[in-house]
Image 1 (cartoon, rainbow, N blue to C red):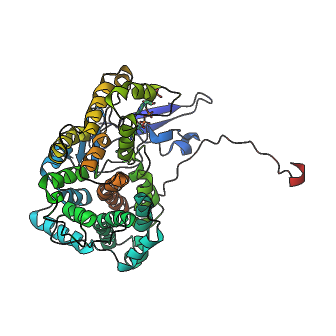
Image 2 (cartoon, rainbow, N blue to C red):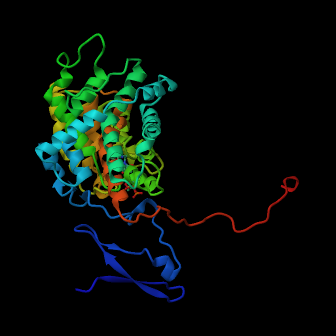
Length: 436
Ligand code: ACO
């Protein structure tokens, strides 16, 4: 069967050239325009990458129209129901679900790498007590390369694997340390007898004066299940802004800790991972159900920068499958940890219902995304609001390192270097200072 082609003709000079259609195992076909400049002397212009695939990847598949999300072919609904975060991390990084023996070896290795170098602990002293935990995350993650430079030969697959394992293992320890620094509590070491999520909660909340596990509700299976689900849902999302940042930084050959630190910075923004924090701020600002129409009107007003946080998605245009799963989890958690009449949750549900009936939101296909609910769950689990994006970092590190591993294993990877449309001055002559 002949390969489908598309012809591009420049109306300015009548020159034309053929380009082949390419595609993966499923999903939208792509037009391979890599030789466009060479053949026709023009670039493409696609701000925000609305129509541009930046790479080939076998990790995650999304069909935004149908609301499908799959990791390595497995539907997110099945993974959220049946798997654990560490099993999903193994799947993303290695391509297959682990055998029992493989999972136990993976878990042991994660436990082995979970501690931080003692010298790294002193880094936190350099941060003011009210530093945003995301600022500390960026700095401390980037600094890890200073401790492991003997294993940074990126041509060596074993060095790459160890670097990836280190980041997945240490990220909850760093995250908890950021919180402990902000409240002035001593750091807590990771424990090998606890699962990934339990360990994180123990490092967050246990006090020298109180044995945490067994005394408080965080060991409760409902809380641990909710965390596992949230981490699984947030683990990867193909070429989102932060993952693309990690890939772009990696394309220069920079070390993986620095590249993941760049990903953390990109995730911080309210249009991306900062959205769950922004949802909580927005709900507090709205305050009560009767003020919803006023805020929805603000969100629709083009002269007002206000947007409904937790609504809309670049890829999902009918529903976000993660939001459907998390909505159910949200109910379970609130049933357990707050009374069912939590005003914040009631407000969120009322806002969701109101916006979904509104013509503007229907027409523009704006639905609640995963972060509309994740912030409410984290709040119920007593995670401080400014740690919400950090929670996202813990989960997404598994995705970032998987994309990095995939990219670094490719035989030839080029530096990522977009072109631009120059809109500045034409050539002009320098004017001496006394003549300006
Ligand atoms: N509230 C009000 N209007 C919105 C919203 C919103 N939350 N989101 C999009 N719109 C409107 C836009 O104004 C635009 O209107 P126009 O066509 O009249 O100009 C239209 O819908 C399309 O929106 P874009 O911004 O072009 O969509 P894009 O794909 O670029 O942005 C994004 C997606 C960034 C998620 C956007 O919907 C948004 O800002 N949402 C709120 C922030 C948020 O929840 N982010 C989390 C994303 S999920 C994640 O990172 C895990």
